[in-house]
Length: 609
Image (cartoon, rainbow, N blue to C red; front, side, top):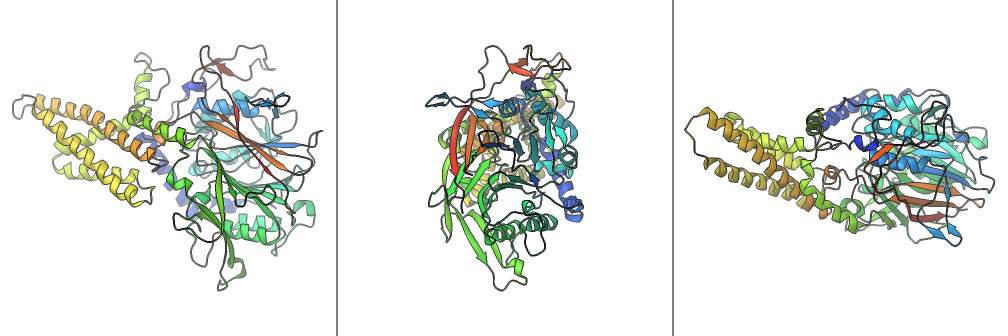
């Protein structure tokens, strides 16, 4: 969806969220997904990494108080309002949320490392989208000029949308840059995955699933060597993960929200499952599995709750993309962890695997996880679903006017084009002659496609039929309306008028029927992605900040902004840099709510011996 304008004169509110129900967005995403999947199947770009994979050592970078801080954010580059609001708070030297301690306001310093969990821009990965939705938002949010004086670093893994160009753009900014910079942050990583050693025997590993749902063989062996497994290791202990070390695994997607086992073939567990089992067998403690991809915050802890024994499942994809619900059935099912053992496996490395996932209502054996926090609150999440009723009439909503052509641009780039598509299908069902049956099939296929993400019998099969029945009744009603218009049989003017009435009435009626359907499904906890993406909700955004103290305790803080500002202006402060530019580049316009941050969740992980 090109024709973008760049630079400081294009404020965040002019960088509209992606209209995910726009037919051109859907076609573009589908085309790039199929193309990239085909490339990975025939020549996985991850196999092309060369050289020895080594961790980056940050173990001696603690502050004067013995603390080490780092940050995590994911799913950033969508609407400008949300992305810039998060970036500005994330890159500020310190954050003072609306929380009061015993001695007043508590201040949280900026992290020494920024971990990016992927999906850095939408809907596709290319240089223009990265610049427009990610880089300019983060560059404009910086408060310092030039390179970071404290030598902070950024590490990133690609998610599915970053892979839509076979990570060509991702590599350009994050891989093999010889400590180059992105928004003033060093980028030391040499592959699309990474390993970082932190103080007090903590490690953070970032994994890359590409579009294959698993790590590749080279990545698997690289992490095995890092843990000193039998296939070889480093002579330098500082380059290896030792027994007793504490581990944070950053995944590109929360695989634990899928059924336990994650569709692994019998006798052939996925490589990440084998890797987890190997690490745990060597006495390395996996304390946290962290991912974005689902656009909300959720923390689940293993039972019994114990800061020394606990391991956590954290989903934190709230960096700028549209909001996903926290009340969705598919995401809130009970989750278990079990150690799978297959003595009949053909090779030793296939005999053990760690499985974490949902178990539905049937239960199962293994350690269970309990949700401790969700943001937004499920009640607020459910209430937002009513916005679906009119969601398919949204324009791309930067300032619209006929004079400068942005009105047509707003229609062309908005969800309203989906409603117009429905109206066009309505027209073909009546005037299409031999194409009438094809139009009906297309309408039925559309109804079935919307519910495809669900496994529930009602949501996947019954609800689409009811949705299709609603469109059929609307067609009959519009047909009766047109029949009431007096006309001469065979009159060309009558045919044109009738077609126009069908198009407009079909667009309005079809858009409302689908909007009501999405509202009902979203409120009921079904279709957590397809029924929430048309809302394009920019509110309820946030990120994670972590502290490792001198005793090795990891404390996590999730900061949330319930309502992001929706109007900005160029910053007129006197803090101009060497080139005369001002940072941050934008500030809230007069009369607009300020971005207010609050501490939503706090948790601790005490080192396990």
